[in-house]
Each structure stands twice: as C-alpha cells, then as structure tokens.
Amino acid sequence: MLDSPPETAKEFSDLPIDVIGEIVEKMELKEQLILRKVCKQLRDVVDEQKTSPFEAIEISCGDTEIFCRYNCEDVVYALRIPRDHHNAKVVHGDDYIGVACNDLKMALGNPKFVLPRFRFFYRSYKESVPSLEFETLVSFLESLGHKASVRSVDIDAPEIDATIRILSCLNPKTLKSIETHRFKMSSSWSLTDSIKNKLDELAEMEQWKQAEELSCPHPTFLFKPEHFSSFKRINFKEFGYDSGALEKYKKIFLAPLSKTILLSIERRDEFQLDESIELPGTPAAPIEPNSVIRHFDIPNSEDYLEYHFLIGQQGMTITKKSRE
Image (cartoon, rainbow, N blue to C red; front, side):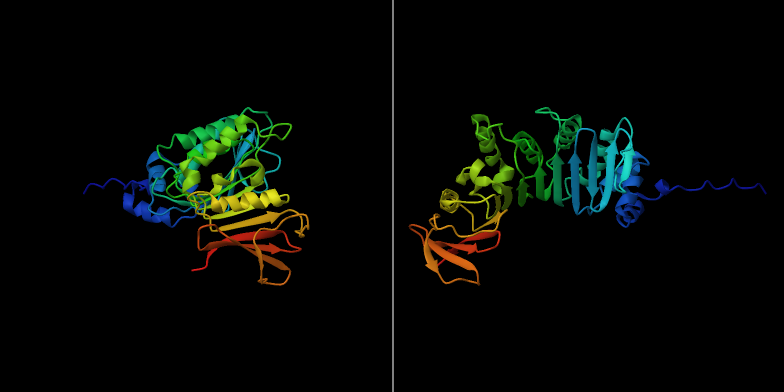
C-alpha cells in the first residue's frame, strides 16, 4: 500500500472567508492592524468587516512625523525613531507617510462605517507652506472615493484653508458636531478681505450648514452672526464680552431662518457684571444663587431669549424659549 503524501499544513488565509471575517471581528484593534499587513486578501477582509472597531481617530500632523490615536492605541509614524514617543508604537522608514495613510484607510476607507469622533490637529513651522505630511494626508482623504462619515469632528489648524480642506472631505449627511480652534490672523490682527472671504466660504459649506452643534473661539471678532444660524446648539470661548458682543449673540437668534435654540459662552476670566454693560431684556427671577436672569422678547413672535449670567463663574447661556 502506497503511503499517502503528507498533508500540507493549512494557513490562516486558507480558511473560508466568512470564518476569517468572524475571527477578525473578535480581534483587538492592534491585532487587526497587524493582520491587514499580511496580504491583500486579509487586508480586504479587515477593511470590509460589518462593524467598525473604531470609536475615535485622532491625527496629529507636524513637519517631521504623524501621530495617530486609534481608540486608545497610539502610533507614531516618522522617518527615524523619535526621542520621545511616550510608549506609542513607532513605525519608521522612508515610506512612513504612506504607511500612515494605509492604516487610516482601515478606519476611513469603508463608506458604510460612521466614525463617532474624529480629530485632526495640524501645526507647521513653515510659514504659509503646508507640510508634506499634511498635503499627503489630505490628498489621501480626498482620494477615498467617498466622503468620510463621522459624527463629530474637531479640527485644530491655524489656517482657515486647512480647516476648509479637511471639512470638505467629510460626509455632511452624518456630521452632527464641529469644533474649530483659533485661526492665525494677520500681524495687525485685522480682518483682511481674504480672511473675510474664507470665513464666508467656510459658512457656505454643506458640512457647516448641516451640522447641529458648533464650538469655536472668539466668534464675535471673526464671524458674522448669520454664519451661525444653521446650528441648534453653539458654544463660544471668549476672552470677554461687552455690549457689542451681547448684541451679536442676539442677532444669531434673530437671523432669518435661524435654528439656534441654545448658546453658551465660556470666558477665560471670571464673569462680573459691569455696570457699563447694558444688559438685554427685562429682569426675571434668578434660577440659582449668584445668577442674573434677563428675558428678551423676540419681535413678532411668542418666543423669547432667556439670558442666564453666572456671577463669579466663567460663562453665561442664552436659551430660546416659547411662551405658548
């Protein structure tokens, strides 16, 4: 009787695709990132799984490296091993930017996935010249073939152009919350025509108009009140506010087709009522100790604005309410 040939040991990739898919969905995120580098077949299985393993993605882009946080897994992509990587996994080599884009494709490449939280942080030491890392990452987002679906985005970039480019890569239908940070201004801190045009362009984007929540710093200096009328809930971070700022806050609610129902303002210094500031509306009973309440009746409407000033604290709220 002839001896039968020895059986060839089966590899993981030899398993049926549906079985591999079930195993992949039970793997930890770092294991999935490793598995998708084995071969194209396994990369496709990881990228096409039914449920996304991601709750949050953070990208921090500089001039010499890229930092990514996948949920709680930190990865640094750089040409050489950085001195301080704070226990993050380090991927280094000539193609570190390409490797970063390939890993991010797992999180953002599947049009069926909706990422709950997405943060993009960008800083460059080169004046007005986007870094290679930034250009490559944004080009990657633009080349996905679809708008990345996220619910909440936090964009921290000094240039308005950078914020517009990143925001344009996101699906407006899924985007609910936007947070922006301080934009770099001219040396005289004046609003040039170029900056005004860029702010108008930002406010006209579908992503901006479809989102329901917004958080941004120093709005009364930069934006027009009508730029905010599409948001239901708004949070501003201000150095302080005067009668002019209070008037601009009111105009957000009074703008045509305004959807705003709540506006909260955080101040860097403790708020004290200045007798020189003319408070809007008429006095009303305080809701809590150390607070001042004012009611402003919206013309030709049953609605009114309730101003809630928190004395000795860092903020105030304005809420649109109805008397019906």
